[in-house]
Image (cartoon, rainbow, N blue to C red; front, top):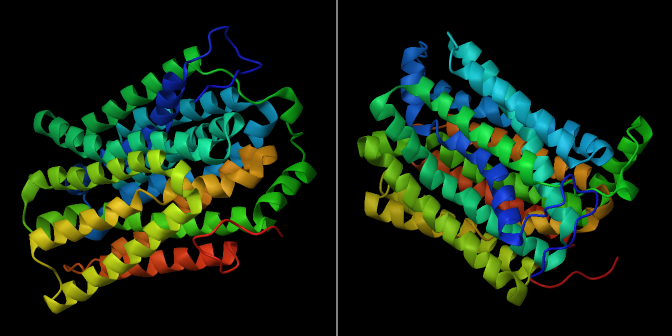
Amino acid sequence: MTFMSMSNTRTAAVPSYPEFVAMIALLMALNAAAIDVYIPALSEIGSALGVAEENRRQFVITAYVIGFGGAQVIYGPLSDRFGRRPVLFAGLGIYLAGAVAAVFVPTFEAMLTVRLIQGIGAAATRVVATSVVRDRFQGAQMASVMSLVMMVFMVMPVFAPNLGSLVLVFGNWRELSAVMVLFGLVAFLWTWARLPETLDEANRRPLTGRRVAEAFRVVVTNRIAFGYTLAMASFFGVLFAFIAQAEQIYTQIYGVGPSFTLYFSLTALFMSASSFANSRMVARFGTRRLSQTALVAFIAISALHLALAMSFGGATPFWLFLTLLIAMMSFFGFVPTNFNALAMEPLGHVAGVGSAVLGSAQMLVGGLLGTAVGYLYDGTLVPMLAGFTALAILSLAMVALAERGRLFTPPTPD
């Protein structure tokens, strides 16, 4: 695969294809780390800041997701007008301000506020990362690149919770916020030095109400783009539901203690492996066939797991729980990158807005759906697995709507 030449670059040096993929992956991984690094610290944060109700501690994750999801619709039009670089660095600056403030917050409410600010700033990285890839690639190439990016993104749930646990051994949750400051600085400095501008002058869209509204209309009225956007938003609710309940399930239901991050990481490792496998398989089997088959398999296994959990009185034995969870999340890795590529494929001329709508729906809608499932935690696996099954079925319904009922086959022309 040849990395395309980039016009309008800030520097003469153009990053190689591996460096480009690594840079985009870092921007995506920043968001995963900002969520996952706090997972082992939720109980400590709640205790330190006087949160009595355990399920409210999940809001540390939710506040970030709301900011991250909601702000993307602002960054999209801005990046289509002013270019990818200015928007990226403005967002990273906001993120760093929120990350620094998180080190010193005195109350739980203040913590939620600065986490919201962090999410608002980090939203620029999601919009720009997806837009830059769409500027350079399309079709199966784009899906392959995004699979490699998502592979690194999926490694974060392996690395971040264990990093969080390691920091907690020597310090407390405030040191975790300091770690995220360092992460943001690395992303800022590397992209400032090495990421060129990828939006051609000819493709810049005027920032007027009429033109922005036109771009949003293109996104929401394109059946394929909007259908797969809703499908991915629904399916991402699965991931957020699992993240929200992971600590409680591992420590309360199965009593594994602080070592739960190792089991959490094991699951994420299989997700990362499936994302890598997707990058190798997508050219042969196609984005539609691969992602839709994986989604159906996920539904079948989650429904089986739900039935077994109910038959065991609310929770399967740990070995069976871990086996079925790994199987489900392995199929999960084949879905988001392909849905992302399918949704973005018709939107090359409005890639910034398209990326913004896609990312906003994915994080905001998926985050809120996942939080709702997480808040229903009752000491058993039933709410989570029922949520998994329902959200995946909803996702499949959105795919069927996008494809007019034709699954596992290439689309027919309108």
